[in-house]
Length: 596
Image (cartoon, rainbow, N blue to C red):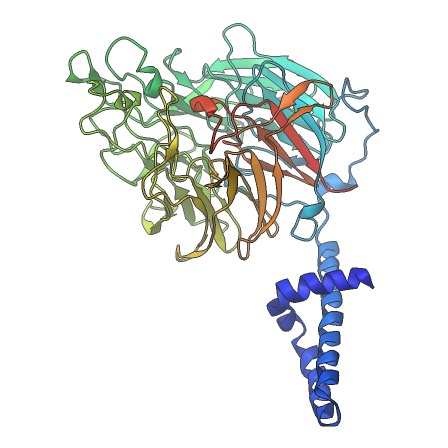
């Protein structure tokens, strides 16, 4: 009876409107009977009977929800069976590359929806618990959305790519970038199943712009290729995409900040999208966001065109044979029509289909934080990149994009014409909308930080004037805000906004958000009410006995993985300042699961 009472309290008080709809016919029949009898009853008796009816309906509602959950199609990983493995240490079996794939890539799919089927919903999210943690020694930040199968997790930490068991955390193999390789930086580890020509492979990219193909079964290298054109400046930040034997690589540039330390004029590099043969690593085509820097703006100080980096994960439209990319600002004059833009390219050649430019004349580089620097363009722009991956909606005709200026856009996939836009926040150099949004059938979810920092020095970090940080749920058809949430935490006795820069994620009726203070939260997608949270900014001993700690959550955010969540915790880019807003560096992967 106590279980039913708990259900009644939860469902009657929290979901009465839905209850009334779901049980309208029952109510009308029963209430008609009760009111017919009321003349013969005391008011106390009548009220008592109505409360009993609501009590029973609440319990029935819970059974109905449970039945709905049971009626959901099972996910492929649920039928996968493998031998139990030791907790930590070395695994006793080998990687099974035929195990069902659970989640893959930064945006979870070609459309970058960040919406992933799972067993986790509002009815059980509060039962999620840490299964194990993984920590990497001598690492101070965690990047890269893991690829997950029913058996294994493929993850990066520093210069290493690991395959570990999904349930126990034991290790299958480790691949280490050697020679001129840098720390792995790409926003995801991409798993590609075997075919007649190639074994199952993993694709990752590093701080030096090198793309690696690695055998998923053994961890042995297959090939590696430099994706850029300027070795000391180009690197890969976004996630890669794969289709029909082609690998699509977004190329960004370190020069936006490195220019403050390098001799010579700013700046010589620009963004690219590169198509590689996925089997061999051969370059098939390159798209350059600007021409080479041939124009002298100010001798010895500024040259151009440049910039328009591509650091968001590309979006694939296989029906149109198109690929959509987002670009950042130009670093100096002359400004181009390809900066701060969403661009549609032909998937076979890289030819431009159309360009949607959100704002003109946005020119900015790290020297703009140095007083009277002649390397800063005149006038300086805002640094309002498209860092969030464009999202192709289920209708196949609409793209949703969001930029660091705090604006959400709906764009026609055929032509690049604007459907609507809505500015939800002030915008800043770190967002605005930073790493990524998520969608479901009705809404797009966008998080805005309105948080700024001196990127070159890591100086004082704070909110911009008039900041409106929060999570916003916008109607996909109109762009109207349906609800907004503004989570907070306490810092030194002060109520402080919890800033969400990392990409959001949706599964079933839940929205997941990880904030710079290291806390992950789950919100109800219907109204934004907070249902669950977990603080990852803690010290711990991991599944292998390695000392670890969590910290700032940025970039990937939460990865929804079947019956649980994966969370990268720890971020040191832009110094990851410990303090009021940021929890700081860390080396942790948290693996959460529902009770088994």
